[in-house]
Length: 588
Image (cartoon, rainbow, N blue to C red; front, side, top):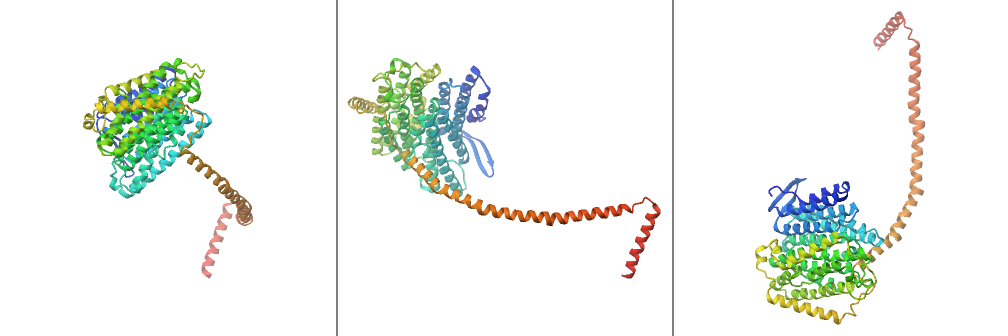
């Protein structure tokens, strides 16, 4: 396709027609838009499109290369699956917010300059906030505000970094920033990106917000924000050691919290942190194999994490709760949901023949290849926690375990279809990884990697068996409890409480005192000053103007009296005036 058509426009412009359409036609329309966008991405040629010079800035809307294409591919595919999952939703606003959200992520992926990145970046933040608020519960409203504030903070970091970067370099091009040349401005940009990637300790917004989103909103949110952040980090900051270290820390931190959480969607949210940690670590390692691994794992993770959130959302929708201590025995009533969830669970755990096995291991191998043995061991250990919490604990206590007494039905058919298709893709990638490897930015390096090598298979099976044995030995200690686990959001909340206290004690008091001072002194002085000028206007200005007017009027009346209409009188008066003028001139 020589003529570039930006896939984001299908979502952004298409969203405006959603409220106009009704019934089956609207459902077809919702499916056609992402399908057309996906087809557009499939047929794109590499190159630079949509280059505009605006106010001296070189704006690039369509930079198409292999790194951007792999993310655009999975984003449009995921949007299609997400729309199927949410077809039963009657509220147009949810669909519109989802479409703007997807459009924003695609805008970032194809952006060739920081100005375009920033605009679409903020569009994503605003649109995704509504996916939280539309659940319309008090906790969702509060979580949405915290989510928005954190992303505004991240956006300010990014914007400040962009301004300083432009001041230093004179360029807005969104390209690789060499580690040796990175200064304060570039690290501000990195921090803005890292916040969206939920890099520790800027991660707490994620487990705070995602569990409070709508059922379909959480499916979209788990796919786009953090993975768009992984893309921009891979674009600008590959090979940064700080990312390798922080990413590895994220993998461990996320699974530790996931293991002790009670809410299904909160467990999955912490696992996003852990799994995105693999990707961030891959970006930080920076070799071709590690970067391929980061992209491959982002692709696989979008699918199986969406599948897990679809399963958890089905349980929430059909039972009214996602708390594990209130669930159990659901396998009898929701068997299909169970099967699809288990596919997602063993995919994220890295079982052979499933997608996580062929993507995650590429990053671990990249750490070994780059001579980072400590990182490699920690990344392997994190997979133990993943299988323990998402592959064993969550399905055991939600679908098996003690019967909770609830008798829910399976969710609507469109939700089951979405889960079925996503499960198929997880299997397809695991069984035939070439379909994924062909999309990766370093294709030759990907072709040289063989996930089904005997040492890797043996290592994986041992880890999974060890973890399974550990789960049943620790089963009683892993029983979910209705408790709140403090995370870094505690600091955010305390900081907000401190700000409100300072505002009420000092800012509000100062504002009240200043208002009283203005009212007692400033306002009175102003009224006195205004009264003086009012009197001056009335007696001074108006008096002069009025007297002049009255005088003119009287003179006019006198002149009118001498207008007799007699021509002889007018001639006599004219001659008299001429004599007077001549006389004055003569004597002067």
